[in-house]
Structure formats: C-alpha cells, structure tokens
Length: 422
Image (cartoon, helix red, strand yellow):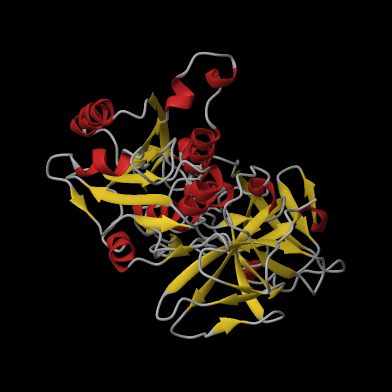
C-alpha cells in the first residue's frame, strides 16, 4: 500500500517534505551552458544531443528515379498509344539499380528500368511493364503516358539545404536513419562526466551488508546515465573532514569531472562534513547558505573553475527529490536543453489535493507527492517529513510547486499540476 498521508488537513512548516527555493541556488543553475560539441559516428549517436542544426547537403533523391518496373520513355512519343493502336518503340538501353545510365534516351526509344533505378537523360515518363509487350528489341506500348508518370523527381522528397534535424534534439532511431542518408558522423554535445562520492562511517564498516553499494549511489548513477551522462562511482569516505577534503582536492585537480555529487551519510549537524569540505576547496565559489530539504537535510552547491559540486543529503528520498529538482535540469542544460531550475522534460498530470497545504509567504516551495486514484479524478498527497521509509522511492510520483506570492494556501480538492519524476 502507498504511504498514507497523516496529520491535520492544513500543513505547517516542515510537516511535509519540501524544498524551499533559494535565489542564489536557483540563479546559479542559470549560469550553466551547453558543453562543447564533438563528432561521433551515426552508429554511436543514439540518445546523444545534436549540437547544431543539420541540413541536407544535397537533394533527395539525388536523381530522378523510377517508382515502377517498366520502361522509361518520352511522354510525347506514347501520348496516343492504346490497345487498338499501340506505339512501337526501340529498346535502346537499360538502367540498373545502383548504376548511372550511360547515354541519352532519344526519340522513339525505350529503356528498361526497375523500381529505384535512375532514369536516363531525356526520359520523362515510365510505362509499367504490364502495358508493354516486348518483341525482340521492339516495345509494343498499349497505354498512353504523361510527363512525370511513375517518376520520383530529383529533390522531390528533401531539397538541398532543407533542415533535417534541429539543434538540441535528442537523437532517436528515426533521426539517425534520416541523417545517415547524408552523413557518416554527427556533431553532438559532449556527454557530461559525473562523479559520485559517498560519505558515511556506516558504509565503511566491515560486514556483508555494508559491502553493498548504497542506494544513493545506485540512484544517482542510474539517473545520470538515463540523462546521457558518463558516470563514475568514486567510493565512500568516512565522516572525517580532513580525509574528505583531501579526496575532493585530488578529484578537482584532475579536472576530469563536470559534476561531482557528494552525498552525506549523516544529517545536518556537527557530523555533516560535506559542506565544510566543499567550502575549503581553493578558488571555490559557494552559492548561498546551506539549503534545507524537508527538515535538517543539508544541500550545498559550489563551483570550481571546471567542476560543479553538489553536497546532497544522505537521506535517500531527500536525495532523490533534490536530484530531480536540480541535478536533472543541470544535466539537461549541459547537453543543450533549455530546462531551467526545477524543470524537467518528464511531463505533468493534473490532480486534486488530497489534503490542504499552507504556503510560505513570499517563497516558492516544492513538495513531493503520492498520486492516488485512477482515471479523471486523481488525488495528490504531500509526503510527511521525518520518515525514513525507502518505500517512498516506489510510491512518490512527482512534485507540486507552491508559490507564496500567488497562493495563500492550497485547499483540499484544489486542482494542481504534478510534475512527474524522471
């Protein structure tokens, strides 16, 4: 059964999981630009983001070709042909698929063609083979024809210079099949390189259970790969400030990562060392004070010359929620998408509030929700804070945005738009 919302109908601060918008944190994400382009083979470009508009370098088809098996002729030569008064033409050549015809079709001549073969110069009509009787080298044509009949003209499908696929498109199988007609390699955005580093004494202890990769690490790696990033697991560091500082210093100096995500094994308080370790990095720019997710779940953002560093909460659902709101648009923007902070391309659904919810005056807050019901009437329930249930990873569907500048509160039954998790 899904997690059941509880508590009074009108939520007080910190009663529910939430993330309040931070002006500095949000504006920092607006600084992120697309990564440089690189060229990859078409066969390796599935799921990559196109770095520039791609245009057809030549028309398609690149020549006039037959759409039927039959004979290429001049339409004027057979304009009056019928079964009672057939027209006789001399078979003078043949055009095979994949070959260019040698020679020109002359008056009162016919060339053998098949579907897809190039028309010889001078031909403007193809007569289907059912309307032709071949006697030695003479074609007996019993049906009239018109100019353009059974012919696909040069450039009739795609004109030279026509746009094929727009910049910032995520390349799918149909895109690649189209582009491969013209190009062997394509300009795509370089994949973001993301490193994942965990902290927490509990994950460094001996024992069978702790040999497992933490749920946080698995979630971040899966999300990053799904969004096109190249992801590397960097292990676990104990809750020791000095050791974490040394580890981060080494990782940043390698300049190999666009993003480093450090998730904490502890909550807010003196044992949370991630924010202090990040702040100690040389030439590191911090964006605002620690942001709180729900109650007491720390979140930090900083930047060195090359690398963005996130200090994510250790609580698995707080981390997942934070990643949806901030890491997803960061990865999208690095690959050229125009997603802003707290925006994703995962879609939305309409629902009605299952309980009432107070707003933060003058602030924007984001609340993860569980969706209940089917069909046209679905209800959104904010998730109660303070729970350590991992079942929330299964039950939470998305989030709602509550702006204190627009709403005094959301009443039970109010229609809301739920942004779905990736």
